[in-house]
Image 1 (cartoon, helix red, strand yellow):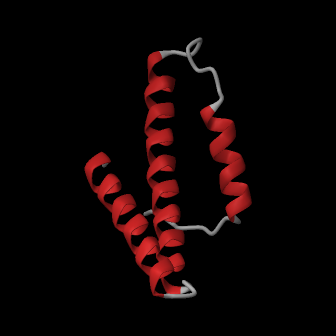
Image 2 (image 1 turned 135 degrees about the horizontal axis):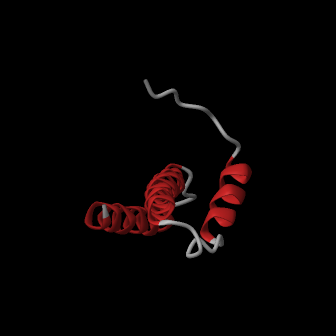
Length: 85
């Protein structure tokens, strides 16, 4: 059973940064596989967070031009996520 937890965004970014910068090549293959699975999951979560932020930019845009630009950025991010995962 998976249990979801909430982390402050700053803590998530700190964890992500640390994991990205670990030199894992002195560890065995099993550890490396687990590491890359974890990095993949963190990347997917990071992309989801960024997509939510892009959507919020649409909602909070000050005018139609800003809303249109925000919507284009959102759609581009969404397309990249769908292609990458």
